Image (cartoon, rainbow, N blue to C red; front, top):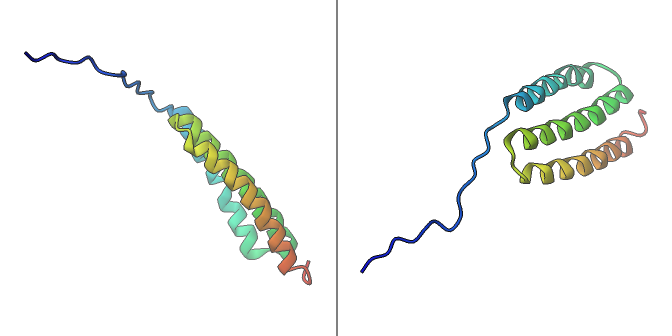
Length: 99
């Protein structure tokens, strides 16, 4: 006698929100002028560009997490925020004689 067991849990597949992903791509495109500032301008302006790029990257990770409905990207955005702040401090510390 064989009894078919019902499924334990129904999988809910949430659709990917393309509006969020387009917003993330637009924000990420804003990092290219910051790269130019880092390469061509003074050390102090490069520090500001690095800090702003870290903020934009954190926002892009949050937008990707919202658009794809995946929880680990929220954690990655939190780690990115902490590390970009620490990276800016290290950048200022090691290049302080030119700042």
